[in-house]
Length: 189
Image (cartoon, rainbow, N blue to C red; front, side, top):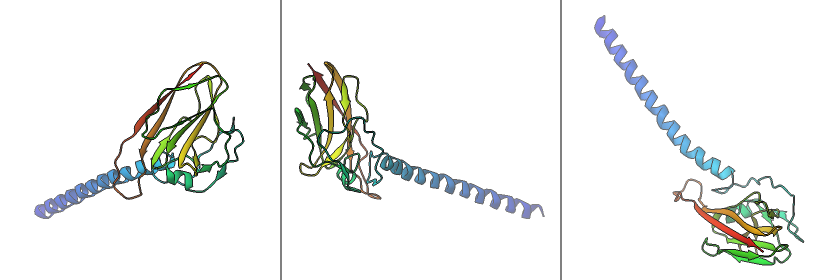
């Protein structure tokens, strides 16, 4: 009787231990998948097709943004807004390699920052005092294959902005996990 009880307790312990290890392994695997899903949902990684809410205090002058489901986010922009006829900016800066030099502008200028398709770009959703962010922010410009942020230079001073770049990852595929900070200094005179 004692021998049967000892075997039963050992089997119960082994099954419980294996069950616990299985649960831990599932939680770890699920946690990895959730972090990818969260980063896709916030527009920072992956191919989320859900459009983010975009505040509209200032619209790009002369622009008519349209939503093209999945286009902007598939190219690396934070939203699916596509603008085809934005008014010409006073200062336009194209970041070809993720580096942006110090940008000089004058009060009243419109400063346009462009980042090439092929990376998942993130940018400010609000501007520091002295700049006004035009909306939609981070829209796709199909003709030039870039994501665009536009700012009105309202007040003289030195203004710091931060953008980010990360790889566009296909769901279920191996992907390098790095984020590159792209600081931008705008000097308004």
